[in-house]
Image (tube, rainbow, N blue to C red; front, top):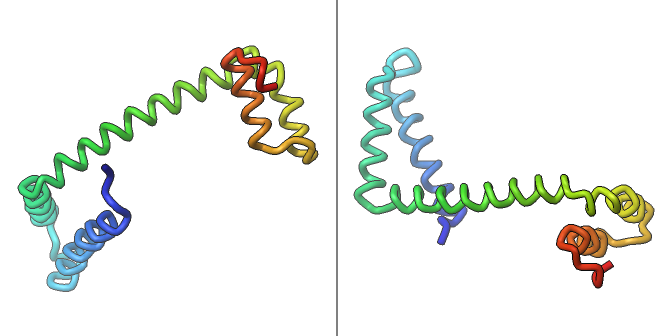
Length: 119
């Protein structure tokens, strides 16, 4: 389960709010790296205490897994000889409007997977 856009926006607003508060209180020249780092550490500790930090890390690990799968599949798909044989013609058909993008994608995927029944 991922965090909602609303939760992410709330976290973003909180971080920006803390930074803005420091700027208002001390100005740009009055904020040191150490103090800003301390604020970040307190924020991280609060997230860790609530379980949100580890939840976010789990979400990131899942996202990284799927990103790797997506990248690897796309690389293999694009490099497949069966796809290369059909790609130019399929692209022309889509551009010409004689084949829908969905049908074209299904045909290329069938070629990639070796399923001639979908062509």
